Amino acid sequence: MNDIESRLAEAMAARANAVEPKDENDALDRINRRLGVTRRTGLAVLGVAAALALVIGAVALLRRDNGNTVKVGIAASTTTAPSSTTTTANTTPASVIPANPNTAIWPFDSMNRSFDTPEAAAKSFAVDYLGMTHARVGVILNADSSRADVEIFPNDRGSARTLVQVAQQPPRGWVVLGATADDIKVDAPKPHDALPSQLTLSGQSVAFEAQVGVQLRPFGSTTSLVQDFVMGGSTELQPFSKQIAVPSTDQPLVLVLFEGDASGEQTFTKATVIPLDAAGPKEPTQAVAQTERCEFVTINLLTGDMSPTTPPSIISSTRLPPEITGSAPTPRGRFGTIAFFDGDRISSYNPANGKVVQLVKPAATPTSLDADDSGRFLLWVDTNHDLWKWSGSAPVKVGSGFNSAAW
Image (cartoon, rainbow, N blue to C red):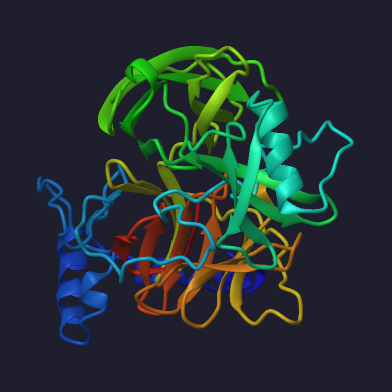
């Protein structure tokens, strides 16, 4: 909630009691009268909840007694806005907002080392990170001014290809973001998926004696925390699937699936390398909102219960730079980016590099927008006074009858 909303709430607080229903019947009568005026307020979060159970997708219910309990339709509702899209350059699905999609696997942050060309970065990664000491560089594919895929082969004779994904990150130069071997195709996990306690590996592979090695390494290290293997095909691509226990850690890890060099001349002959994010934060289960009657309430998003609360503290508003046009800017948590409405979609602005990424298309213009501390979850109220939440896929309508809301 911004300063203007807070001041408005304070100015109107004295008027709230004047419109307070006398009892449950009075409350129901008022809502029925408002239904004849406008469809929007018929969905308001001011109704009656007597012995009625919460029904998914139903209108909001209100019970005014000593318990001061309110229920709203919550996440189970099937009412959603248009599906979300993203304009990021990679193919990370919108269901997970990457903590940092450009996190470099190589060179390590601790190294005083940089590479002036994509080939140099890919060759060093193959030799020093994967142990392919005889690695041969092929051609550059899918290149533009900031990204490229570099072919790496195990030696002068070998045909097993690993494509190393590199990107230019000034002032560091060219860095490695991941790698994909033609013979080790991974369906799950995807790059920057959040690490669960049990990591499911699936895909197709072909390798000597059908065995593909598996490692989980911390960022900034070649030492593996987990060493395992999966069985695919020995002469042609065959599916593999396995669950691997992930060590208890709050740090991101690098997944390496590889074929060892049977000749013993080097460590690997090919590898698929995937960065994985630390275990993602859970979606918040509680929000604070201001109703159309300027009452402040706490909403339990699991049960639908809504109870009166005191106005939240006023927080200084976030500002966008002059070159970025948008409304309702709010910080997106620890990642340092700013979420805002660009006139069409809720987008994310990164002050570090000036880039804007579109996140989700709301059903109507947001008038209040907030992000949780992790930056992964959004909450907004639109011009229809509808309350929505978003965790990366399609937005979910929580309820109606609100002026603003925050996690």
